[in-house]
Amino acid sequence: KYILYRKSQSEPEELADVPGVTILKPLVGGDANLSHNLASYFELTYSRYELFFCIQNPEDPAIEIVNLLIKQYPNVKARLFVDTVDRCLNPKINNLLPGYEAGQYDLLWITDSNIKVTPNTLTDMVGRMAENVGMVHQLPYTTHTDSLAGYLDKVHFGGSHGRIYLTTNACGVNCASGMSCLFRKHLLDDVGGLETFGCYIAEDFFLAKSIYDRGWKFALGNEPCFQNPGKRSVENYVARMIRWSRLRMAMIPLISAFEPISECIVCGLIGAYGINHFAKIGFGTIYGIHIGCWFLCDMMLIKLIQPTPIELSWKIPAMWIFRECSSIWIFIRALSSRTVMWKNQKYRILCGGKAEPCKK
Image (cartoon, rainbow, N blue to C red; front, side):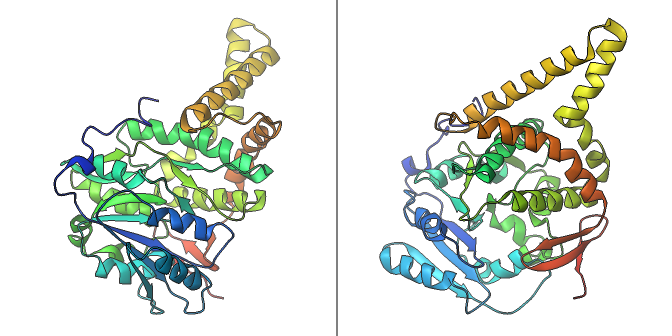
């Protein structure tokens, strides 16, 4: 709670001349929530920003949605880019390059299409951009839906993922998620621009690493980053976790090797066996206490991250159990291959994090 929902030390809107911000939104396809998500950027209270939507397919259904929003909010400086040229391997970077090159401000906010923001989000993030900070990122979380997949996202991003994200950030370790990041653009220009990172699938990790390696600090936004996709499913969640695991195995293999023992089930088994062996306390008793305490701690963390009260539903413990039980299976599945599917294209992940497209 100390980290999230704090008031920024200096509110940008109180300054005489607020810094301008270029917002880049990569778009591919449309879903039921896309218009609502994009509209939230037109309603930001920050006074000086330009909003660029980037699309590669001229037949993309998102084009109609963007054009309608631009007409609906004529006072917002917004522009649509449609560019079919492939200039690098990463489809997200490819998508963003026209908007990146057209941006006139040094502060650059890259945020995914399924992210919904509050009117104060940009004000908060710019307020966290101190003189020694090169990037401001947000803790990934999710909006509420009453589906099983919605609760699965909630217990993952509010529990396991939130715990690791906040801990590594507090330790000064690169943990930035590319869902929503505010950069100093000149730091990217100094190393060749956004296109330099187009050889990676996990471009967010290497963007952050490039900034951190030059001595700049990171800052975590006071608000979480709210994912609000129009379609959720357990299958999509599992595929996403497998993809992320394979990327981590290629980028940080030594750390990834220890991931299973950080999971509730595995570390509980190790701890219960050790206590049973040395203290002669029943294995089942210790393991049951461990599981119960872990669940309660995750619920406390979700309560701190979520701005509204936790919903009372049997789906929360059910999806928490599913998430904990599936984590080891996901890790094993990730070990079975080095290919990932992303944006309808299959890639082979190479050691170090670079990728190459698989032959069709």
